[in-house]
Image (cartoon, rainbow, N blue to C red; front, side):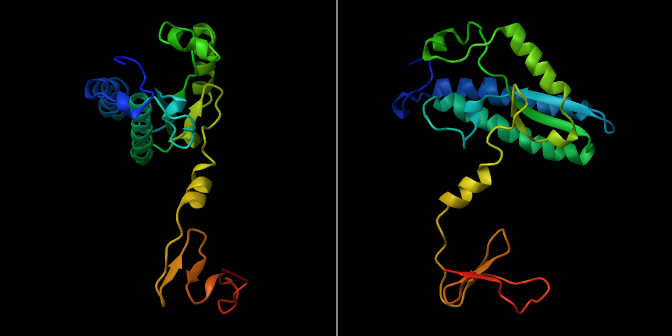
Length: 205
């Protein structure tokens, strides 16, 4: 499995993992270190890093590709973190991760038989350039595809809320969730009205 995407954890190899992170994570990290400080402190500017949809943790439904997925997920985190720092320097800047899709290049040839939508490189370049041209400060920290659509952006909070185990509260303890609702073992879940703090408009188990 040397040089090939891992289909199982039994295929994981330190050298392959290190190479994947060196190319897909450490290289872009050094670009962030040396080039983002050169961006202007005023006015629109952009820094776009080529990521991959398989780097989305929420979008991972098939498994496999351990090293590549992990390296691209790490890149997405680097881009997100750098976008926060960059926003402190210039709120009109856009630091973005972009999924270019599967392009018809020698890199993609081994996977063409899997029915992937291979796009000609000239078309892919035009689409990517079009997305970059439309970016502004409002896209800072985002992860978009070659059509400019956000990747799984709206599902992260929903899935996290649904999948997270509910905490077990000891008697007398109160917990407040992200919606401002309080819960306790004795009283269940409730939220207080801003107009009438003594009123409990919602209550449930």
